Image 1 (spheres, rainbow, N blue to C red):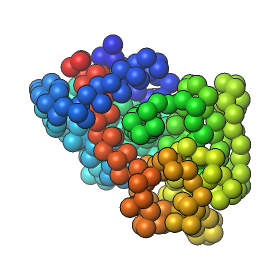
Image 2: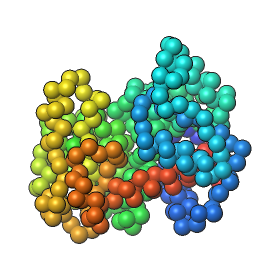
Image 3: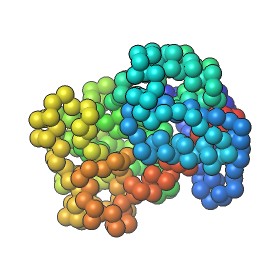
Amino acid sequence: MLKGRSLIEPGNFSLEETDSLFAIAEKIETDQRYLRDSCRGKLLATLFFEPSTRTRLSFEAAMLRLGGSYIGFADPGSSSAAKGESLADTVRMAASYADAVVMRSPKEGSALLASRYSDVPVINAGDGGHHHPTQTLTDLLTIRRLHGDIKNLTVGFCGDLRFGRTVHSLAKALARYDNISMVFISPEELAIPEYITRHLQKNAVAFTETRSLEESMPKLDVLYMTRVQRERFFNEEDYIRLKDTYVLNKEKMALGKNNLIVLHPLPRVNEIAVEIDDDPRAAYFKQAKYGMYIRMALLSSVLGAV
């Protein structure tokens, strides 16, 4: 069903197709032999023009666990991009070697552009402040596994909502599910972009914007924390002024529901205190592991193994 398809933004796949990926990921989680070696002989190109730990390593681990191999770079300085090679030429080259391309870039729209020059599926691993669809699949799978379903939930997003591509992707994806409401918690300078709120209004999704994490905590079923992203700021002074606006600690967690789950796309800096890690409601490390399972499901699907 997904064989040969690219994934540039979450809306590329229908809810039915997304649910099929979740079912595959859940089967992989419970049966480590499922799909083992299903991608033997397949090659994945990982083109990371921007730093990454979890996304890159989880894609590489996923491909290896499926029996395939990977090539690529984690530093554009070690590629011909440093010599001025165009993105189109880099992608054409990678697509001539590999069966699929995973790409991260600091430039919005780069993944869509890459897909137009590639003969093989392109998977967007993050394009600037725009989209991060495989993180969204990770987030949705985590919510589904820990809450049992993706509906009838109040989801809070806290921190850098202006530049946070994971927030933008997840908010748009959640808008397709039943009875979801959202709370956007941020300083004014990092508020959720208007194009996201217009999308929510168009889809009749209830949302509020606030500055107070404490006032929001009691009503949330999911809290999605984000770091203030230093790399998205044009000046250091604004970053320093805003970076510690929200810190989730034990006092704030005490205000939350017993079945609250706390997510974070990681890396964190200091927006979640280390003392929270032992709280059973802290799910961000489970979330990282679910990321490998969903990427295994995605790769096996677009490569035609299932």
